View 1 (cartoon, helix red, strand yellow):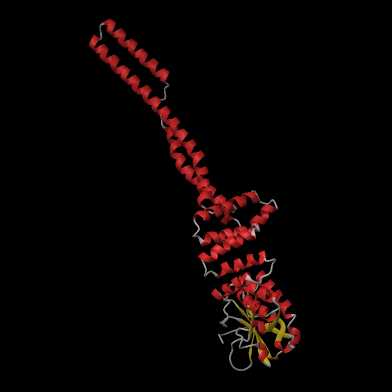
View 2: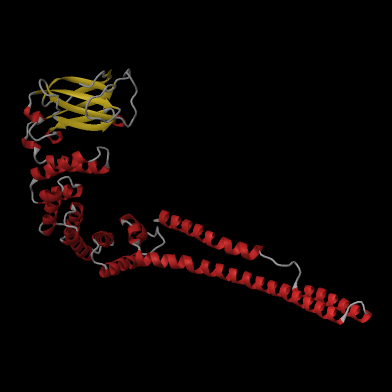
Length: 405
């Protein structure tokens, strides 16, 4: 938010400079005479006395005297009149500059607050920061802007993005009843947006004491029907299944979600923790032959020194036949040495599972390109055949790959 207002102030300053500079430069640089009006009159009075002297001395005829006096009068009027006009022009330019400086910034801010969407500048962390006294605006002021957005939507109700923004704002303010009403309007206007329905389900659960049963589950199902890879929809579906005691279904949703997430993200770590907890209830009845675990290290004399962000793939494949992996784990070089576990949760397809094999080949590969397919220049390590259920597999990555296999 601070960045937005800083940029807005900078643009306003540039605009005001462009408008005020011509006015101020004109008022300070335009002059007609360096002499004040009284000095000019004194000069013309002396010239008039000289004309009268010439007339009395006979060196100037009465007609010439009259013409000369008229000429002096005209010149005096022109000089003093132009200078008065210039002074008035200077004063007018200064007043106009002051008026622009006072009116334009205020008008721009008021126009933005009326037509714009100041609530879009805020997110939930901002609002919590306000409650902690870390921001200048108060909760009351934020609620005022939210109410202003609500008023605008009342006049212009056919705006799904506006209703979605209002719903998220109400959620951040923990006004869940209002948030649910806003989401209801948003999903009517944009029924095919999966993420919108997932957010709606989350608010409905908050209104239901945290339970996802009922209307919340209905919205989750619609969200996943629209987009089977919707992350929030998968997370909520897993939580709902766990709430119903359907552990296997919850694990399925979490496994799906885990494959969509960056492996080093905090969200992936939370999902992995959920999976570990859920599997604790199911693995007691599953033989240990369903997984392989061990350690991956990098040989000190490896053909090259990989960068910390290069991708590490650890995977198991059949001893004979297809090289399609049965299970794949993706990490980075910065995670080495890596303790790994390969099991059916890391299967690429439900039909090809690690638990269906007796022995497999286990490989680890460092890819500079991050490509899942082997490439020239990859660093590789391999062991096997390894019996399913082995728990102390050791893979040392050190050989330079020469071609894509």
